[in-house]
Image (cartoon, rainbow, N blue to C red; front, side, top):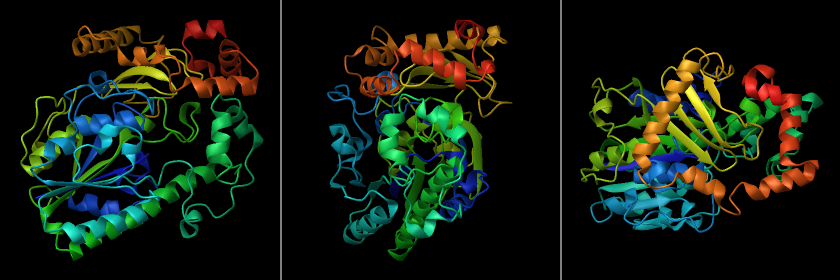
Length: 460
């Protein structure tokens, strides 16, 4: 059997039509889901891109591999920790169409063929992948990794897609909608990177529609890849896995069109698996699973022995239709634009603040996600027993995983020149305030009082 792993950058699960989204964003993935297995509760425990892919390819959590921030120079993978391509190399042919190795060297390890393109849209990646498959299809079994970036900001889908979900030009929005965006410390960066490049639209709904258009554009060429596999005679002996490194916040929690803050809109990602045989077509798995499970699953698919380093579990029993219990809890972290830890169960989610970073959240949060899936009502004060129970569980898990090692999230925040500090200082200079002044003023003007715990309300 061969394996093709597609990890679509910045793809949140609930914007796919096969996950119930109202727009028809993903017909090719919908069809793939109909032939395979859809994991409805699949999670990225470490965000954003570099932490997410490191967890995915090592089968270990960020608390183990230590890569908890984005793009910090000098970051190193611990000695002895191997990536999935390194584990597979010599047993199967390994190939990728990707550009991650330019950020950290370990992303390029273990490949027999590593292709980097100037264009990272699925249109170009599918073309390159099909050329590689045509040339090397006799070198089976193979593992092929593809990394399209289409839904990543700025959302600049080609013309035919741009108006698919929004007929206008993006003008006509309310100035009040933009007031909290312009007051953020990340605004100077995102004005250059996102808004200017999109033509400075004023309607937030237009920007959401362009994100959806990017998904539709990516899906079109995923479908072309699937068709090409069939035409090459590879479909019937190739497993397809499609997931994402993280999602995207559209406007939730005052995070506008980026993937920071370990809220569900960023942590909840799709996983669709289509096997040539052994999978029940149309099966939907509701138990919680996570990135750490992909590497051991691929090892099982390819018949390669799983190394002891893996902290995840193989999804093969679930793919074969067995009743399998998922994780009791997902433990999540970030140390890029915010620094936080979280524990999420099926019913509750507790977020513990380490450093407020470039946003306004300098307090802890507790959500009853079973009834409040969008995490809108902070129940930290109202449910102290739940808060304390989850905090104890999170702390015990961290202590067990760390042993004598320091918490990598706190280590990252202690580093001079950490990945968030440059943008934070640029933003403070732009708004002309100290960090304490900015947090106080921002929360007073834009954060609903009920979102704040009582102690924080008293300060503001």
